[in-house]
Image (tube, rainbow, N blue to C red; front, side, top):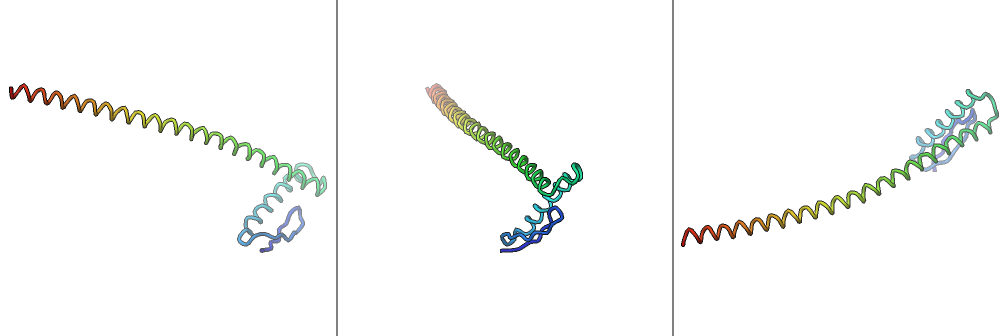
Length: 122
């Protein structure tokens, strides 16, 4: 397990993570620290715990919104897949109708050809 030192709210923490995830963990810590700094500049020194809670609530709100958007996108994808199935069925039916029409026209052309040939020979 890898170890990374991160600075959050002016405090250094040593955090473990999976090998190869160090950069992602540093980015997450930087994001959290930026949020805390934004709240500090907006509200002043309201206490480190309060700043952490405010940042956590903001992250939770963003996560909830992302989950909502994901659920909406999944529902839209399901609707699109249903529509695709309907369109594919309609295309298949149209192809069968075209084949039937061409078969029927071919049969008529063959009958007309046979009639013309019979009249020419007779």
